[in-house]
Image 1 (spheres, rainbow, N blue to C red):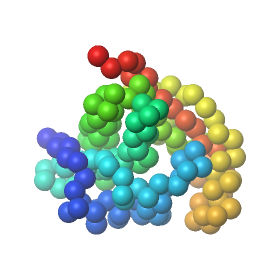
Image 2 (cartoon, helix red, strand yellow):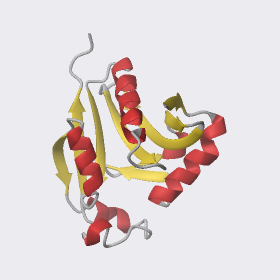
Image 3 (cartoon, one colour):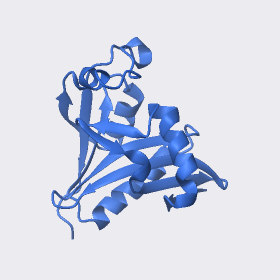
Amino acid sequence: MIRIDPITPDDLDFVRAELRRNWLSTTIRSLDKPYEADRLPGFVARLDGQRAGLITLHFDDPARQCEVITLSSTIENRGVATALMDRAESAARGHACRRVFLTTTNDNLRALRFYQRRAYRLVAVHRAMMDRYRQTQNHIPLVGMHGIPLHDEIELELPLGEPQ
């Protein structure tokens, strides 16, 4: 059974380790905006009592939207990411958001598959955004997953409609 809980101060070591493991930093850029992801709200997944995943969120209440800044799982193919996304989408509805959106890199084929299977739609390609980030963040590689040159940020969204 997967349990999803809000991030608490007791989770911060896990949160920081998970961010560094997946993004090599706790500062995450999305659409050219930096986020200190270890300071964002979000949720931790627990599987058999052990931390197994993380999602961090940014709520833009005036725009009525929620951005998924990070999503990661320490255990693959057990439903951890799905449970975290379900909880994030529920939280977005609770904030009266009209949409949930996120970005991923052009090389992240697994993420693109995951989100599109969840009914997220491609809404924009932010060309050369990774090249821009690389100018100040030298840890970003030139070539990403699957040998794909890493250049663009792809934006996906799930419209939530008007709150009931």
